[in-house]
Length: 448
Image (cartoon, rainbow, N blue to C red; front, side):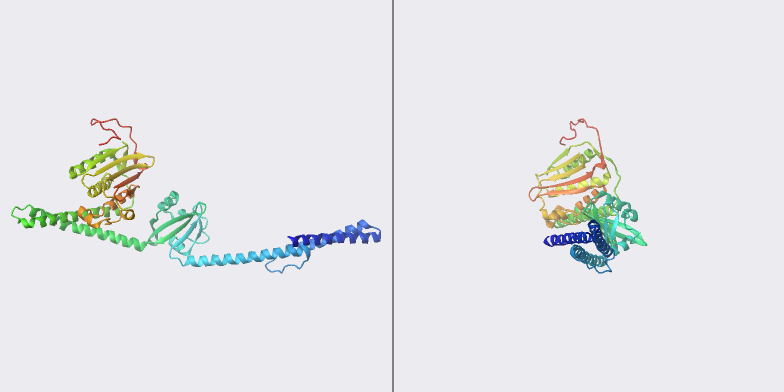
């Protein structure tokens, strides 16, 4: 600040000195005002010369040296020169960082695409160009969905729910399976990771085919074995000491048959990811059937309560829905001790339709909850085998919900029982007028 005042004082002193000198010269020749005007004109000419040199240097500063000027002009040139050097330093640094970013992104095994709020391409690395068929320069600023022409990918971006990845098949010469994972940042911008998962998809297809074929091949011999075991166990001449092992063999063959049936059903569900259209289903009647079948099988072992809080119906595949709901009911029956309560509930709100099964069983520790819908995952393997479960029921429920656009939620605490809830979207709800009590005296909302 002090240097600035000194520079301005020096410049003002020079102007005053030139003016005084001009007045003295003009006084000597008898025209003081002409002398003053000439002196000021010379001073203005010097200012214009310095301004021209400064402007010329600013225009061509990359190939010219700064002008040699003193006083205030020298300070201006010095400050501009420092700013220019600082700018050049930061520019070179940013270029170096950008080149390093490009080199590192080019070596990544996954594709990276940066999209703006309108889902237009701002930048992509080399791998993304290879996987998606993008071209540099020509594709910048174009919406990515319009280039890929995959309807599901467009819906994925429009939905805005990026909690899970999207897997799609795209044909570029040959069929390629790609996995997309979007991550929001900034103001509506997205970083999109693209991965080639063709090998994983092929292995998964091989696994599914193997399970399906093996299950089909095992079903026939198991049916024969079960038939012979049933015949032998009812034989009156069968020795008494062979009856217990024969009954155990029958029980194990029935368990293996149930596992194979569940594997086949799961294979059918995994064969397609398309959502089912379905037909209108009376959920109230379905819950009554489930409760009746459970009471018939278990007798008075459990208290079964049905709570229907809405008469609205559901558009779904009845066979798949019955399978999913019965798996939840059967699961609750197996793990609820005698004298416990099983509650079946159906209700509808602004989020859609919801079916839940609540039991008073031992509950599930929280560390097991994220893995419950995995194939063959068991919280207590020994107890599950004793109960006769296949370990596939919840996996079937999860796939059925996915085929209907819904989801399975699990809430449980150790020692406090469990609640399994199927959440179905509001688009599948078929609204019904308020029902009056029927001949049995029950109406929606009352217990059955």
